[in-house]
Amino acid sequence: MSRTPLLAGAALSVMLVGCPGPPPPSQFPNAADALGRMKATYACANGVQGEGKIDHVGKQGRVRGDVLMFAINPARVRVDVLSSFGAMIYSLTSNGTDFKMLDTQNKQFLYGPAKACNLARMTQVPLPGHVLVSLLRGEAPLLVHQDEAMSIGWDDGHYAIEIPSTHEAKQTVHLQVYGEDWMKPWAQQRVRVTHVEVVQRNFTHYIADLSDHEKAKTAPPRVDPDGLDPDIPPSGGPCDAE
Image (cartoon, rainbow, N blue to C red):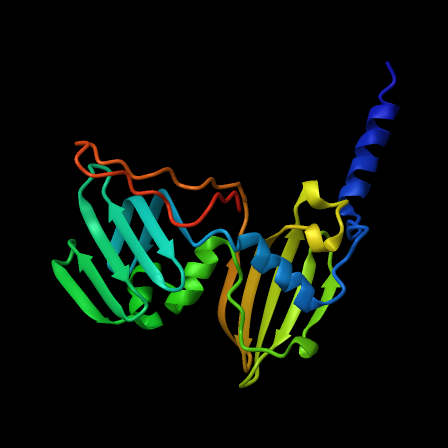
């Protein structure tokens, strides 16, 4: 049996993978229109609730367990870290003005203004509350800018937007068009954020890479297990943003 066709097919696959993908037939006219579609895509997502796993080794030792997270516009955050046995390790809350954090490992209760340095006690990255909430919702928080100063280009499967701001700051945002919207007019395309970077005077404030996007459904009503209080419906209408 000849293996030549298989080898040729493998070589062709490698060549195809290495080629940059073309942009959609209907492209965004400018950066402002692209960012407008980003905002429209995530407009229905007022907040996000999620859970995950953490295994972090830092100066204060190792933290391993489950993470429960709530983030609501514009800057309300709650993050709980539980041990594998369900015991509380950390609990952080911030309403955009006040910061509170319970650290049971070190038997501390911290409170103060909701500044980036305080939120970093949990997140390990000094991000303002509104930036953290936007990223957790999947949207890029934008620097102050002038629309006409922004630029946009297509770069191997995504739009790359450059946003000059004040005080020599610059932001880069990558947007990827939904596959099912590829053939739609640009004004109907939904986009997902895959990369956000903010640099000021050659100092990188943060880099956020977002991947493994999945659609999230609107939360169901909260039900009183004892049946005494009425159900609490979710705020806003139906939403299936990623």
